[in-house]
Structure formats: C-alpha cells, structure tokens
Image (cartoon, chains in turn purple, cyan):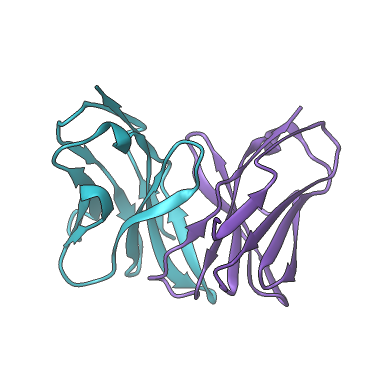
Amino acid sequence: DADVTQTPRNRITKTGKRIMLECSQTKGHDRMYWYRQDPGLGLRLIYYSFDVKDINKGEISDGYSVSRQAQAKFSLSLESAIPNQTALYFCATSDSGQSNEKLFFGSGTQLSVL
Amino acid sequence: AQSVTQLDSQVPVFEEAPVELRCNYSSSVSVYLFWYVQYPNQGLQLLLKYLSGSTLVKGINGFEAEFNKSQTSFHLRKPSVHISDTAEYFCAVSKYSGGYQKVTFGTGTKLQVIP
C-alpha cells in the first residue's frame, strides 16, 4: 500500500461546485502539504500543516481551504470551483520542517473544472 | 527570495547516450538542493539531494549531480540513459523559513528517451 494516498485520482466537476480532495498517510509524519502542479509552472504550495492544530497558507491559497482531521488526514477543499483551478494536485508529507528533509508525495489528483 | 531555473523544458536523447539536465538557483542564504523525478501517472520521488560536503552527489538509478557554488548550478547527469528514465525531472531548493521548510520547485524538464 502507498504511504501517501490521495482520493480521488481523477475528478471532473462544473464551475461553482464544492470539491474536496482527500489525503491520508501511514508514515506517521506530522507535516503535511498540498501542492498544485500546472504545466510549465512546476509545483506551487497551497497550504501546509505542522499538526492537527496548525494550518498555514502557502503561496497560492486563495480559493482553497483545508482541514487537518487527524495526524494522518489532510483534506483540500475548493469552495466554489473555477476553470483556472484545473490542475494536478499533490499531497506531500515530511518528517520534520528542517531544510534537509525530503518530501513524500502521493500519486496526485487530476482535477478538471468545466 | 529563492528561485530555481530549469532552462530546458524538454530534452530528447537516444537510449544509451549521456544526458545532462540543467538547474540554476538563486538564494540570498545557504540552501539545500534536490532533484525529484516524476514518472508518468505517479507522484514525485526523491532522486538525490545535496546538503553539504562533497559537491558530487550520487542518487538512485545511476544519476548524479554536481553542486557548483560559484555558478549556482546543480546539474543532473547520467552517463547512459535507459528507456525507463523517461520522466519529468524537477530541481528544487529548500531552506528553513518562517518556521517551516520552504521548498521552491523549478518548472521541470521532460526527459524523453528515444529507442
């Protein structure tokens, strides 16, 4: 089983709909992240969380919200989806916040907003 | 502010030929450098990282990268590529900022290995 699991793998929705992307991990890591990948732009950080009580905005948080339901679960919501939120979304974890720590990624969720 | 530049968006190369994927970074402070690989329909996974010490870093699958501080570069190389190396490669820099690990990714280089 994957250490970082994202559901769904693919989602097509309409403009204005509320969407939730889910992430769960079995690595026991405290830190969890949501990134967005767009062609030619690399990965950009949406939100990150150090623990259940700690949520922080990343560089592109507008239009998104998150919930850390437990140490192992971190959900990303689009309150009212718009077409420019069409992208590949990745959840990631790390063991600590130190600069030399590698990130562990899920397989991604491809979201299309029509 | 830190930034990462991957000048080549796509690199086609014949099987068993050598390859170099270029990465340049800028940062006002010391950073750690990473290369991640993304195979089709998968998430990113760590290929190698430079923290300190020897400037030549060896990673998985025969890849290596050389840290050059004067040129602010961290190019990825492999002497002989295989079909299975076809993937997208991301260079990244990381530093501790505001209480968390701030990671900045490059825009990615798609390596296409031609049989």
